[in-house]
Image (cartoon, rainbow, N blue to C red; front, side, top):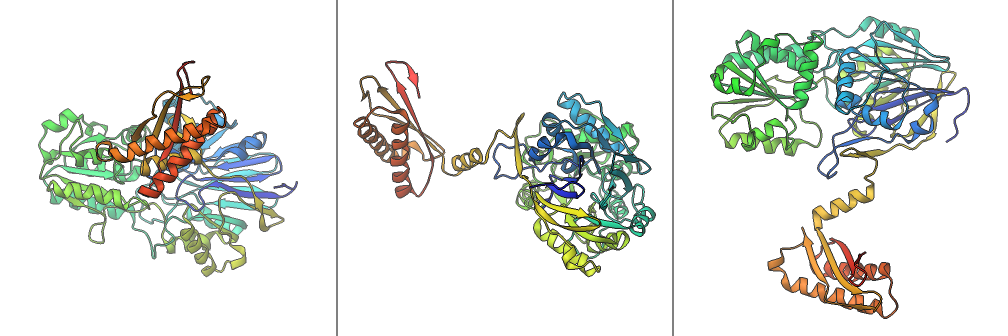
Length: 559
Protein backbone atom coordinates (compact mmCIF):
# COMPACT_ATOMS: atom_id res chain seq x y z
CA UNK A 1 0.00 0.00 0.00
CA UNK A 2 1.03 3.63 -0.42
CA UNK A 3 1.94 5.61 2.70
CA UNK A 4 1.10 9.32 2.46
CA UNK A 5 3.48 11.91 3.90
CA UNK A 6 2.08 13.65 6.95
CA UNK A 7 -0.16 10.76 8.03
CA UNK A 8 0.47 8.39 10.93
CA UNK A 9 0.00 4.64 10.48
CA UNK A 10 -0.71 1.95 13.08
CA UNK A 11 -0.54 -1.79 12.42
CA UNK A 12 0.33 -5.14 13.97
CA UNK A 13 2.82 -7.68 12.66
CA UNK A 14 1.66 -10.15 15.31
CA UNK A 15 -0.72 -10.43 18.26
CA UNK A 16 -4.10 -10.05 16.53
CA UNK A 17 -6.24 -13.18 16.32
CA UNK A 18 -3.72 -15.03 18.51
CA UNK A 19 -2.36 -15.07 22.05
CA UNK A 20 1.33 -14.32 21.62
CA UNK A 21 3.72 -13.17 18.88
CA UNK A 22 3.08 -9.57 19.91
CA UNK A 23 4.55 -6.91 17.63
CA UNK A 24 2.96 -3.52 16.98
CA UNK A 25 4.12 -0.52 14.97
CA UNK A 26 3.43 3.20 14.74
CA UNK A 27 4.93 4.96 11.72
CA UNK A 28 4.97 8.66 10.93
CA UNK A 29 6.86 9.76 7.81
CA UNK A 30 10.42 8.47 8.29
CA UNK A 31 10.01 7.42 11.95
CA UNK A 32 8.96 3.88 12.82
CA UNK A 33 8.39 2.84 16.44
CA UNK A 34 8.12 -0.89 17.20
CA UNK A 35 6.50 -2.20 20.37
CA UNK A 36 7.47 -5.72 21.49
CA UNK A 37 8.79 -8.68 19.49
CA UNK A 38 7.32 -11.93 20.78
CA UNK A 39 6.94 -15.58 19.90
CA UNK A 40 4.23 -18.22 19.99
CA UNK A 41 5.16 -21.70 21.11
CA UNK A 42 3.78 -24.01 18.44
CA UNK A 43 1.11 -26.64 18.98
CA UNK A 44 1.41 -30.24 17.89
CA UNK A 45 0.29 -29.45 14.35
CA UNK A 46 3.55 -27.56 13.66
CA UNK A 47 5.84 -30.56 13.68
CA UNK A 48 9.52 -29.85 14.30
CA UNK A 49 8.97 -26.12 14.75
CA UNK A 50 10.53 -24.48 17.82
CA UNK A 51 8.94 -21.03 17.62
CA UNK A 52 6.51 -19.06 15.51
CA UNK A 53 7.62 -15.44 15.06
CA UNK A 54 6.32 -12.48 13.04
CA UNK A 55 7.19 -12.01 9.38
CA UNK A 56 9.79 -9.21 9.37
CA UNK A 57 9.51 -8.43 5.64
CA UNK A 58 7.97 -4.97 6.16
CA UNK A 59 10.64 -4.04 8.70
CA UNK A 60 13.40 -5.12 6.31
CA UNK A 61 11.92 -2.94 3.58
CA UNK A 62 11.66 0.06 5.94
CA UNK A 63 14.78 -0.55 8.00
CA UNK A 64 16.05 3.03 7.68
CA UNK A 65 12.90 4.38 9.36
CA UNK A 66 13.19 2.32 12.54
CA UNK A 67 13.95 4.48 15.59
CA UNK A 68 13.78 1.76 18.21
CA UNK A 69 12.14 -1.33 19.63
CA UNK A 70 10.28 -0.57 22.86
CA UNK A 71 9.48 -3.46 25.21
CA UNK A 72 6.51 -3.45 27.59
CA UNK A 73 7.72 -6.34 29.82
CA UNK A 74 9.83 -9.49 29.84
CA UNK A 75 7.49 -12.34 28.89
CA UNK A 76 8.43 -14.56 25.95
CA UNK A 77 5.39 -13.56 23.90
CA UNK A 78 6.80 -10.02 24.00
CA UNK A 79 10.60 -10.51 23.84
CA UNK A 80 11.13 -14.04 22.48
CA UNK A 81 11.61 -12.99 18.85
CA UNK A 82 14.32 -10.41 19.56
CA UNK A 83 17.32 -12.65 18.70
CA UNK A 84 15.73 -13.55 15.35
CA UNK A 85 14.76 -9.93 14.67
CA UNK A 86 18.32 -8.73 15.26
CA UNK A 87 19.67 -11.35 12.88
CA UNK A 88 17.47 -10.04 10.05
CA UNK A 89 16.85 -6.34 10.69
CA UNK A 90 19.06 -3.48 11.88
CA UNK A 91 17.45 -2.25 15.09
CA UNK A 92 19.28 0.95 16.18
CA UNK A 93 18.21 0.64 19.85
CA UNK A 94 16.13 -1.51 22.17
CA UNK A 95 14.48 0.17 25.15
CA UNK A 96 13.28 -2.16 27.92
CA UNK A 97 12.45 -1.99 31.63
CA UNK A 98 15.00 -3.48 34.04
CA UNK A 99 13.72 -7.07 34.38
CA UNK A 100 13.02 -7.40 30.66
CA UNK A 101 16.45 -5.98 29.81
CA UNK A 102 18.14 -8.61 32.00
CA UNK A 103 16.15 -11.39 30.32
CA UNK A 104 16.99 -10.02 26.86
CA UNK A 105 20.71 -9.87 27.72
CA UNK A 106 20.62 -13.50 28.85
CA UNK A 107 18.75 -14.53 25.71
CA UNK A 108 21.26 -12.81 23.42
CA UNK A 109 24.20 -14.17 25.40
CA UNK A 110 22.89 -17.74 25.06
CA UNK A 111 22.75 -17.31 21.28
CA UNK A 112 26.13 -15.63 20.99
CA UNK A 113 24.66 -12.33 19.76
CA UNK A 114 26.55 -9.14 20.61
CA UNK A 115 24.33 -6.08 20.86
CA UNK A 116 25.44 -2.86 22.55
CA UNK A 117 22.34 -0.68 22.18
CA UNK A 118 20.06 -2.11 24.87
CA UNK A 119 18.87 0.68 27.19
CA UNK A 120 16.91 0.41 30.44
CA UNK A 121 13.98 2.81 30.86
CA UNK A 122 11.65 3.65 33.75
CA UNK A 123 8.31 5.42 33.90
CA UNK A 124 10.02 8.82 34.20
CA UNK A 125 11.88 8.59 30.89
CA UNK A 126 10.77 10.28 27.67
CA UNK A 127 12.47 9.56 24.33
CA UNK A 128 12.10 12.30 21.74
CA UNK A 129 12.77 11.84 18.05
CA UNK A 130 12.24 14.31 15.21
CA UNK A 131 8.42 14.28 15.20
CA UNK A 132 7.52 11.40 17.53
CA UNK A 133 8.09 10.95 21.26
CA UNK A 134 7.66 7.93 23.54
CA UNK A 135 6.90 7.76 27.27
CA UNK A 136 5.74 5.07 29.71
CA UNK A 137 3.40 4.35 32.61
CA UNK A 138 3.65 1.61 35.24
CA UNK A 139 1.17 -1.28 35.13
CA UNK A 140 0.54 -4.38 37.22
CA UNK A 141 1.26 -7.79 35.67
CA UNK A 142 2.75 -11.12 36.76
CA UNK A 143 6.31 -9.97 36.09
CA UNK A 144 8.09 -6.93 37.58
CA UNK A 145 8.67 -3.73 35.61
CA UNK A 146 5.61 -4.00 33.36
CA UNK A 147 4.65 -0.85 31.47
CA UNK A 148 2.22 0.66 29.07
CA UNK A 149 3.69 2.75 26.26
CA UNK A 150 2.55 6.16 25.02
CA UNK A 151 3.49 7.32 21.51
CA UNK A 152 2.91 11.00 20.73
CA UNK A 153 2.69 11.91 17.04
CA UNK A 154 1.70 15.12 15.17
CA UNK A 155 -1.67 13.49 14.37
CA UNK A 156 -2.58 12.24 17.82
CA UNK A 157 -1.53 10.07 20.77
CA UNK A 158 -1.46 6.27 20.68
CA UNK A 159 -1.48 4.36 23.97
CA UNK A 160 -0.75 0.64 24.27
CA UNK A 161 -1.44 -1.07 27.59
CA UNK A 162 0.93 -4.01 27.25
CA UNK A 163 -0.32 -6.86 29.48
CA UNK A 164 -2.09 -5.54 32.55
CA UNK A 165 -4.53 -6.04 35.40
CA UNK A 166 -5.74 -3.76 38.17
CA UNK A 167 -4.70 -5.30 41.50
CA UNK A 168 -5.20 -3.04 44.50
CA UNK A 169 -3.24 -5.41 46.77
CA UNK A 170 -0.39 -6.53 44.48
CA UNK A 171 2.86 -8.12 45.56
CA UNK A 172 4.88 -5.55 43.60
CA UNK A 173 4.16 -1.87 42.88
CA UNK A 174 0.59 -0.86 42.10
CA UNK A 175 -0.27 0.47 38.64
CA UNK A 176 0.23 4.22 38.28
CA UNK A 177 -3.47 5.11 38.27
CA UNK A 178 -2.73 8.83 38.51
CA UNK A 179 -0.57 8.89 35.38
CA UNK A 180 -3.06 6.76 33.47
CA UNK A 181 -5.85 9.16 34.41
CA UNK A 182 -3.64 12.15 33.52
CA UNK A 183 -3.08 10.68 30.04
CA UNK A 184 -6.83 10.39 29.66
CA UNK A 185 -7.39 13.99 30.71
CA UNK A 186 -4.78 15.21 28.20
CA UNK A 187 -6.46 13.35 25.33
CA UNK A 188 -5.75 9.96 23.79
CA UNK A 189 -6.63 9.35 20.15
CA UNK A 190 -6.24 5.55 20.03
CA UNK A 191 -6.05 2.93 22.79
CA UNK A 192 -4.64 -0.54 22.09
CA UNK A 193 -5.67 -2.72 25.03
CA UNK A 194 -4.90 -6.26 26.24
CA UNK A 195 -7.77 -8.64 25.38
CA UNK A 196 -6.50 -11.91 26.91
CA UNK A 197 -9.20 -12.14 29.59
CA UNK A 198 -11.95 -10.22 27.81
CA UNK A 199 -14.21 -13.30 27.98
CA UNK A 200 -13.96 -13.44 31.79
CA UNK A 201 -16.57 -11.52 33.75
CA UNK A 202 -15.89 -9.59 36.93
CA UNK A 203 -12.48 -8.81 38.39
CA UNK A 204 -9.42 -11.06 38.41
CA UNK A 205 -8.07 -12.46 41.67
CA UNK A 206 -5.50 -10.45 43.53
CA UNK A 207 -2.04 -11.98 43.66
CA UNK A 208 -2.19 -11.59 47.46
CA UNK A 209 -4.96 -14.25 47.56
CA UNK A 210 -2.53 -16.73 46.02
CA UNK A 211 -0.04 -15.95 48.78
CA UNK A 212 -2.67 -16.81 51.40
CA UNK A 213 -3.75 -20.00 49.58
CA UNK A 214 -0.16 -21.23 49.25
CA UNK A 215 0.46 -20.57 52.92
CA UNK A 216 -2.62 -22.65 53.86
CA UNK A 217 -1.45 -25.48 51.61
CA UNK A 218 2.04 -25.53 53.17
CA UNK A 219 0.49 -25.51 56.65
CA UNK A 220 -1.84 -28.42 55.81
CA UNK A 221 0.77 -30.80 54.34
CA UNK A 222 3.94 -32.21 55.90
CA UNK A 223 5.07 -34.14 52.82
CA UNK A 224 7.15 -32.96 49.87
CA UNK A 225 5.41 -30.27 47.81
CA UNK A 226 6.03 -30.01 44.05
CA UNK A 227 4.84 -26.76 42.48
CA UNK A 228 4.58 -26.26 38.72
CA UNK A 229 4.16 -22.69 37.57
CA UNK A 230 5.12 -20.41 34.70
CA UNK A 231 8.85 -19.68 34.85
CA UNK A 232 8.12 -16.11 33.77
CA UNK A 233 5.65 -15.44 36.61
CA UNK A 234 8.23 -13.76 38.82
CA UNK A 235 5.78 -12.63 41.49
CA UNK A 236 4.49 -16.21 41.86
CA UNK A 237 8.06 -17.44 42.25
CA UNK A 238 8.58 -14.76 44.91
CA UNK A 239 5.43 -16.05 46.73
CA UNK A 240 6.73 -19.57 46.74
CA UNK A 241 10.21 -18.61 47.96
CA UNK A 242 8.80 -16.44 50.77
CA UNK A 243 6.36 -19.21 51.76
CA UNK A 244 9.17 -21.77 51.87
CA UNK A 245 11.16 -19.40 54.10
CA UNK A 246 8.26 -19.14 56.55
CA UNK A 247 7.75 -22.91 56.65
CA UNK A 248 11.39 -23.94 56.86
CA UNK A 249 11.61 -25.63 53.45
CA UNK A 250 14.52 -25.73 51.03
CA UNK A 251 13.91 -25.33 47.29
CA UNK A 252 15.20 -27.39 44.39
CA UNK A 253 14.56 -26.05 40.89
CA UNK A 254 14.05 -28.03 37.66
CA UNK A 255 13.72 -26.51 34.20
CA UNK A 256 16.26 -24.27 32.47
CA UNK A 257 13.85 -21.36 31.98
CA UNK A 258 12.92 -21.54 35.67
CA UNK A 259 16.59 -21.55 36.69
CA UNK A 260 17.36 -18.56 34.43
CA UNK A 261 14.42 -16.49 35.67
CA UNK A 262 15.20 -17.16 39.32
CA UNK A 263 18.88 -16.32 38.80
CA UNK A 264 18.02 -13.02 37.08
CA UNK A 265 15.38 -12.19 39.71
CA UNK A 266 17.82 -12.82 42.56
CA UNK A 267 20.42 -10.60 40.86
CA UNK A 268 17.78 -7.88 40.36
CA UNK A 269 16.62 -8.07 43.98
CA UNK A 270 13.09 -9.23 43.15
CA UNK A 271 13.58 -12.59 44.91
CA UNK A 272 15.34 -12.88 48.28
CA UNK A 273 16.66 -15.81 50.35
CA UNK A 274 19.22 -17.17 47.89
CA UNK A 275 20.38 -19.59 50.62
CA UNK A 276 17.12 -21.58 50.34
CA UNK A 277 18.08 -23.05 46.96
CA UNK A 278 19.75 -26.47 47.06
CA UNK A 279 20.94 -29.14 44.64
CA UNK A 280 18.90 -32.23 43.65
CA UNK A 281 21.33 -34.40 45.63
CA UNK A 282 20.74 -32.34 48.77
CA UNK A 283 16.98 -32.44 48.22
CA UNK A 284 16.94 -36.23 47.95
CA UNK A 285 18.75 -36.53 51.28
CA UNK A 286 16.25 -34.37 53.19
CA UNK A 287 12.85 -35.47 54.59
CA UNK A 288 9.85 -34.48 52.44
CA UNK A 289 8.56 -31.85 54.88
CA UNK A 290 11.79 -29.91 54.40
CA UNK A 291 11.65 -29.76 50.59
CA UNK A 292 9.76 -27.85 47.92
CA UNK A 293 10.32 -28.74 44.27
CA UNK A 294 9.80 -25.86 41.85
CA UNK A 295 9.47 -26.90 38.22
CA UNK A 296 8.22 -26.13 34.73
CA UNK A 297 5.53 -28.10 32.91
CA UNK A 298 2.22 -26.42 33.73
CA UNK A 299 0.97 -26.95 30.16
CA UNK A 300 1.79 -30.66 29.93
CA UNK A 301 4.82 -30.07 27.68
CA UNK A 302 6.31 -33.54 26.99
CA UNK A 303 9.91 -32.54 27.75
CA UNK A 304 9.20 -30.28 30.74
CA UNK A 305 10.26 -31.33 34.23
CA UNK A 306 6.77 -32.15 35.52
CA UNK A 307 5.95 -34.37 32.53
CA UNK A 308 9.19 -36.29 33.03
CA UNK A 309 8.33 -36.68 36.71
CA UNK A 310 4.88 -38.03 35.82
CA UNK A 311 6.46 -40.45 33.33
CA UNK A 312 9.10 -41.56 35.83
CA UNK A 313 11.91 -40.54 33.47
CA UNK A 314 13.43 -37.62 35.39
CA UNK A 315 17.09 -38.40 36.08
CA UNK A 316 17.38 -36.45 39.33
CA UNK A 317 14.15 -37.06 41.20
CA UNK A 318 11.40 -39.68 41.51
CA UNK A 319 7.84 -39.21 42.71
CA UNK A 320 6.82 -40.51 46.14
CA UNK A 321 3.32 -41.70 46.95
CA UNK A 322 2.84 -38.96 49.58
CA UNK A 323 3.97 -36.11 47.28
CA UNK A 324 1.69 -33.11 46.75
CA UNK A 325 1.69 -31.66 43.22
CA UNK A 326 0.38 -28.12 42.73
CA UNK A 327 -0.51 -26.59 39.35
CA UNK A 328 -0.18 -22.87 40.13
CA UNK A 329 -1.24 -21.84 36.65
CA UNK A 330 -4.08 -21.64 34.18
CA UNK A 331 -4.42 -23.53 30.90
CA UNK A 332 -3.29 -21.72 27.77
CA UNK A 333 -5.94 -22.21 25.04
CA UNK A 334 -5.31 -25.48 23.20
CA UNK A 335 -3.32 -27.12 26.00
CA UNK A 336 -6.17 -28.67 28.03
CA UNK A 337 -5.64 -32.18 26.63
CA UNK A 338 -1.90 -32.32 27.36
CA UNK A 339 -2.47 -30.92 30.87
CA UNK A 340 -5.18 -33.53 31.57
CA UNK A 341 -2.85 -36.26 30.33
CA UNK A 342 -0.16 -35.22 32.82
CA UNK A 343 -2.65 -34.94 35.70
CA UNK A 344 -4.02 -38.42 34.96
CA UNK A 345 -0.50 -39.89 35.07
CA UNK A 346 0.01 -38.28 38.47
CA UNK A 347 -3.28 -39.67 39.79
CA UNK A 348 -2.33 -43.15 38.56
CA UNK A 349 0.75 -42.93 40.79
CA UNK A 350 -1.44 -42.06 43.78
CA UNK A 351 -0.29 -38.44 43.93
CA UNK A 352 -2.48 -35.72 45.44
CA UNK A 353 -2.93 -32.97 42.84
CA UNK A 354 -4.12 -29.40 43.36
CA UNK A 355 -5.31 -27.27 40.46
CA UNK A 356 -6.78 -23.78 40.49
CA UNK A 357 -10.49 -24.00 41.35
CA UNK A 358 -13.01 -21.91 43.24
CA UNK A 359 -11.98 -23.87 46.35
CA UNK A 360 -8.26 -23.30 45.90
CA UNK A 361 -6.94 -19.90 44.78
CA UNK A 362 -3.45 -21.10 43.86
CA UNK A 363 -3.29 -19.06 40.67
CA UNK A 364 -4.19 -15.51 39.70
CA UNK A 365 -4.00 -14.35 36.11
CA UNK A 366 -1.75 -11.46 35.19
CA UNK A 367 -4.42 -10.17 32.79
CA UNK A 368 -7.44 -8.11 33.71
CA UNK A 369 -11.01 -9.40 33.48
CA UNK A 370 -13.94 -7.52 31.95
CA UNK A 371 -14.40 -4.96 34.73
CA UNK A 372 -10.70 -4.10 34.71
CA UNK A 373 -10.79 -3.61 30.94
CA UNK A 374 -13.69 -1.20 31.45
CA UNK A 375 -11.68 0.64 34.10
CA UNK A 376 -8.75 1.13 31.70
CA UNK A 377 -11.08 2.47 28.97
CA UNK A 378 -12.75 4.86 31.42
CA UNK A 379 -9.41 6.18 32.68
CA UNK A 380 -7.81 6.59 29.25
CA UNK A 381 -10.99 7.91 27.58
CA UNK A 382 -9.78 7.24 24.01
CA UNK A 383 -11.51 8.60 20.94
CA UNK A 384 -10.81 5.34 19.08
CA UNK A 385 -10.27 1.82 20.35
CA UNK A 386 -8.37 -1.20 19.00
CA UNK A 387 -8.31 -4.44 21.03
CA UNK A 388 -5.09 -6.42 20.73
CA UNK A 389 -3.34 -9.49 22.22
CA UNK A 390 -6.06 -12.09 21.81
CA UNK A 391 -7.91 -14.56 19.63
CA UNK A 392 -10.66 -13.13 17.43
CA UNK A 393 -13.44 -13.93 19.93
CA UNK A 394 -11.48 -12.06 22.62
CA UNK A 395 -10.91 -9.05 20.37
CA UNK A 396 -14.60 -8.98 19.40
CA UNK A 397 -15.72 -9.20 23.03
CA UNK A 398 -13.30 -6.43 24.02
CA UNK A 399 -14.68 -4.19 21.27
CA UNK A 400 -18.18 -4.82 22.67
CA UNK A 401 -16.89 -3.87 26.13
CA UNK A 402 -15.54 -0.61 24.69
CA UNK A 403 -18.93 0.16 23.14
CA UNK A 404 -20.55 -0.39 26.55
CA UNK A 405 -18.10 2.24 27.84
CA UNK A 406 -19.41 4.82 25.33
CA UNK A 407 -16.88 4.32 22.53
CA UNK A 408 -18.90 4.59 19.29
CA UNK A 409 -19.06 1.27 17.44
CA UNK A 410 -17.67 2.92 14.29
CA UNK A 411 -14.64 4.02 16.33
CA UNK A 412 -13.64 0.45 17.26
CA UNK A 413 -11.35 -1.63 15.07
CA UNK A 414 -11.18 -5.43 15.29
CA UNK A 415 -8.28 -6.07 12.94
CA UNK A 416 -6.00 -8.82 11.68
CA UNK A 417 -2.21 -8.79 11.51
CA UNK A 418 -1.21 -6.57 8.58
CA UNK A 419 -4.32 -4.38 8.59
CA UNK A 420 -3.28 -0.72 8.62
CA UNK A 421 -4.99 2.23 10.29
CA UNK A 422 -4.21 5.79 9.21
CA UNK A 423 -4.44 8.71 11.62
CA UNK A 424 -4.61 12.31 10.43
CA UNK A 425 -5.54 15.31 12.56
CA UNK A 426 -7.10 13.06 15.18
CA UNK A 427 -9.24 11.09 12.72
CA UNK A 428 -8.59 7.36 12.25
CA UNK A 429 -9.73 5.10 9.43
CA UNK A 430 -8.73 1.83 7.79
CA UNK A 431 -6.09 2.45 5.13
CA UNK A 432 -5.03 -0.86 3.62
CA UNK A 433 -2.89 -3.90 4.24
CA UNK A 434 0.80 -4.82 4.45
CA UNK A 435 2.52 -8.19 4.44
CA UNK A 436 2.23 -9.88 7.84
CA UNK A 437 2.19 -13.55 8.68
CA UNK A 438 4.04 -16.33 10.43
CA UNK A 439 7.69 -17.22 10.14
CA UNK A 440 8.82 -20.58 11.49
CA UNK A 441 11.97 -21.19 13.51
CA UNK A 442 13.31 -24.71 13.06
CA UNK A 443 16.54 -25.15 15.01
CA UNK A 444 18.73 -22.22 14.00
CA UNK A 445 16.94 -21.72 10.71
CA UNK A 446 14.44 -18.90 10.36
CA UNK A 447 11.94 -18.72 7.52
CA UNK A 448 13.37 -21.69 5.64
CA UNK A 449 10.47 -23.94 6.58
CA UNK A 450 7.62 -22.96 4.26
CA UNK A 451 3.95 -23.89 4.37
CA UNK A 452 4.72 -26.52 1.73
CA UNK A 453 7.28 -28.13 4.04
CA UNK A 454 4.82 -28.08 6.93
CA UNK A 455 2.21 -29.71 4.70
CA UNK A 456 4.66 -32.49 3.83
CA UNK A 457 5.44 -33.03 7.51
CA UNK A 458 1.75 -33.36 8.32
CA UNK A 459 1.24 -35.81 5.48
CA UNK A 460 4.18 -37.92 6.65
CA UNK A 461 2.88 -37.85 10.21
CA UNK A 462 -0.65 -38.85 9.20
CA UNK A 463 -0.13 -41.07 6.15
CA UNK A 464 3.58 -41.88 6.03
CA UNK A 465 5.97 -42.04 3.11
CA UNK A 466 6.51 -44.54 0.29
CA UNK A 467 9.97 -44.57 -1.33
CA UNK A 468 10.36 -46.18 -4.76
CA UNK A 469 13.96 -47.07 -5.72
CA UNK A 470 14.50 -47.95 -9.39
CA UNK A 471 17.85 -49.11 -10.83
CA UNK A 472 18.09 -48.06 -14.48
CA UNK A 473 20.52 -47.85 -17.36
CA UNK A 474 19.49 -44.48 -18.74
CA UNK A 475 21.82 -44.72 -21.74
CA UNK A 476 20.40 -48.11 -22.66
CA UNK A 477 16.90 -46.96 -21.87
CA UNK A 478 15.93 -49.88 -19.67
CA UNK A 479 14.95 -50.84 -16.15
CA UNK A 480 17.56 -53.23 -14.71
CA UNK A 481 15.36 -54.83 -12.02
CA UNK A 482 11.97 -54.52 -10.36
CA UNK A 483 11.70 -51.35 -8.27
CA UNK A 484 12.14 -51.67 -4.49
CA UNK A 485 9.45 -50.29 -2.19
CA UNK A 486 10.40 -48.89 1.22
CA UNK A 487 7.74 -47.46 3.55
CA UNK A 488 7.82 -45.54 6.81
CA UNK A 489 4.66 -44.72 8.74
CA UNK A 490 2.43 -46.10 5.95
CA UNK A 491 1.75 -49.79 6.62
CA UNK A 492 3.30 -52.71 8.49
CA UNK A 493 5.42 -54.52 5.92
CA UNK A 494 4.80 -58.08 7.18
CA UNK A 495 1.03 -57.61 7.16
CA UNK A 496 0.82 -55.94 3.73
CA UNK A 497 3.17 -57.92 1.48
CA UNK A 498 0.52 -58.27 -1.22
CA UNK A 499 -0.08 -54.51 -1.34
CA UNK A 500 3.65 -53.73 -1.52
CA UNK A 501 4.10 -56.32 -4.28
CA UNK A 502 1.30 -54.65 -6.24
CA UNK A 503 3.02 -51.29 -5.83
CA UNK A 504 6.24 -52.78 -7.23
CA UNK A 505 4.39 -53.99 -10.33
CA UNK A 506 2.64 -50.65 -10.79
CA UNK A 507 5.93 -48.76 -10.49
CA UNK A 508 7.60 -51.12 -12.95
CA UNK A 509 4.80 -50.68 -15.52
CA UNK A 510 4.83 -46.91 -15.05
CA UNK A 511 8.57 -46.76 -15.74
CA UNK A 512 8.39 -49.03 -18.79
CA UNK A 513 5.49 -47.04 -20.24
CA UNK A 514 7.42 -43.81 -19.91
CA UNK A 515 10.64 -45.29 -21.36
CA UNK A 516 8.76 -45.89 -24.61
CA UNK A 517 8.19 -42.16 -25.04
CA UNK A 518 11.78 -41.15 -24.21
CA UNK A 519 14.17 -40.94 -21.25
CA UNK A 520 13.40 -38.09 -18.85
CA UNK A 521 13.98 -38.27 -15.11
CA UNK A 522 11.23 -35.82 -14.18
CA UNK A 523 8.58 -37.46 -16.36
CA UNK A 524 9.37 -40.95 -15.02
CA UNK A 525 9.24 -39.78 -11.37
CA UNK A 526 5.99 -37.91 -11.95
CA UNK A 527 4.42 -40.97 -13.59
CA UNK A 528 5.43 -43.20 -10.66
CA UNK A 529 3.95 -40.70 -8.17
CA UNK A 530 0.66 -40.33 -10.07
CA UNK A 531 0.10 -44.06 -10.59
CA UNK A 532 0.95 -45.10 -7.03
CA UNK A 533 -0.91 -42.21 -5.41
CA UNK A 534 -4.13 -43.07 -7.26
CA UNK A 535 -3.93 -46.77 -6.40
CA UNK A 536 -3.06 -46.21 -2.72
CA UNK A 537 -5.81 -43.62 -2.27
CA UNK A 538 -8.41 -45.90 -3.91
CA UNK A 539 -7.51 -49.04 -1.95
CA UNK A 540 -6.42 -47.67 1.43
CA UNK A 541 -8.00 -44.20 1.68
CA UNK A 542 -4.58 -42.76 2.57
CA UNK A 543 -2.34 -40.28 0.78
CA UNK A 544 1.30 -40.86 1.74
CA UNK A 545 4.14 -38.90 0.20
CA UNK A 546 5.50 -40.82 -2.82
CA UNK A 547 9.25 -40.34 -3.23
CA UNK A 548 10.72 -41.93 -6.41
CA UNK A 549 14.51 -42.37 -6.47
CA UNK A 550 16.10 -43.32 -9.83
CA UNK A 551 19.60 -44.80 -9.77
CA UNK A 552 21.50 -44.63 -13.07
CA UNK A 553 23.71 -47.66 -12.41
CA UNK A 554 25.93 -47.21 -15.46
CA UNK A 555 26.81 -43.64 -14.50
CA UNK A 556 26.56 -44.17 -10.76
CA UNK A 557 24.19 -41.22 -10.58
CA UNK A 558 21.22 -40.88 -8.17
CA UNK A 559 18.22 -38.72 -9.17
